[in-house]
Image (cartoon, rainbow, N blue to C red; front, side, top):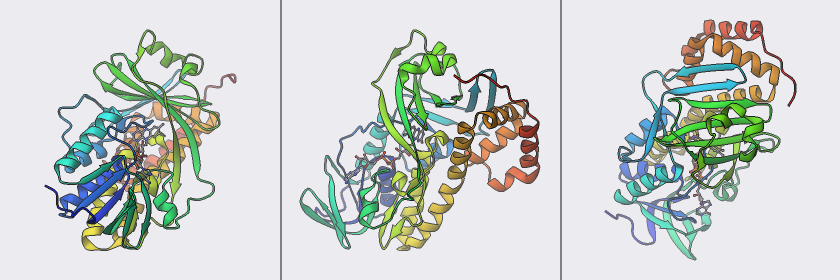
Length: 381
Ligand SMILES: Cc1cc2nc3c(=O)[nH]c(=O)nc-3n(C[C@H](O)[C@H](O)[C@H](O)COP(=O)(O)OP(=O)(O)OC[C@H]3O[C@@H](n4cnc5c(N)ncnc54)[C@H](O)[C@@H]3O)c2cc1C
């Protein structure tokens, strides 16, 4: 069903990644006509850890994106590993989902086409103004513009919203390996140079993403930097080329200007170590569709701030921990010795419990364990 005329639509979405497609689907569910343009063609690939948190899985279901037929692998929680320290926690109830980025994109794009979103793949949006956007040399008139054009957002620039000069940026790489997943948890391996996350994405495949602050650990360095992980991957052949990306922790002062709204990485983001980017974007899409239906940008501004707050805090804490070896050893040791505290923190991170439910007793107990933990000291590598 196509509801927009060729050059007029209620909503125009700039960018067709997970955020843009999520926003388009949520707006269509509100009965709005939607047009979307992306300069690339589906399925669009991107460096990503490819783990969808439980809240993201729920959001996909709410958007009506069928994932039952796709090659995926469910996971039940997180395991942190550094040397001999292993700390793990499971989600309460719902499961996360490992899914190849291209498969996720294909499913979202197909759902958008089926719901009547008019898609212009291979079309770059050149400019926007009050009443519309310019794409392929033509003006499309619209009431609302959604900037879903990623962390280097031009829409953000066009409406004059600046990113803070000191926004945290970390480099990331990802590659797939053909091997049977050895765990039903996403594993995060820690090292002074960065982290490696392993997400099961199929019955015979894992996605390995590596992020670092000062310099990126190359995938070919895995054996030196993450020997325990390299051992797991011994004999496994690469199932994709290495792809690089940037992970940022950014909070913007505003995510709307008039009837232009930013979503996904364009609207600020939590570090990729949270594994939350896609879930955040999908959750934002409902809030934005509500705001458009009510014609109230402030509704989205408030909801957006709420959705991004906890992932940002969590991302900043994890990056801080990653950068300080002694603190990291103490925190990991404390989480390992108090799995129930780790499980409570993970429940909040997964959206299954509110931050208020962490409780002062938990914070005090964790603080005490961190102070009391014997942090194994090892020589610099
Ligand atoms: C190393 C790494 C690991 C990560 N791991 C995870 C993880 O495990 N789980 C998770 O949920 N998230 C993860 N993330 C974060 C996640 O990848 C992002 O949050 C997510 O891709 C954001 O989606 P988006 O749609 O906002 O942006 P993007 O996916 O970047 O999409 C933006 C789109 O806009 C298009 N575009 C840009 N400009 C224009 C224009 N002018 N006209 C038309 N189109 C345009 C681009 O072609 C692109 O397709 C990770 C990120 C990194 C870097």
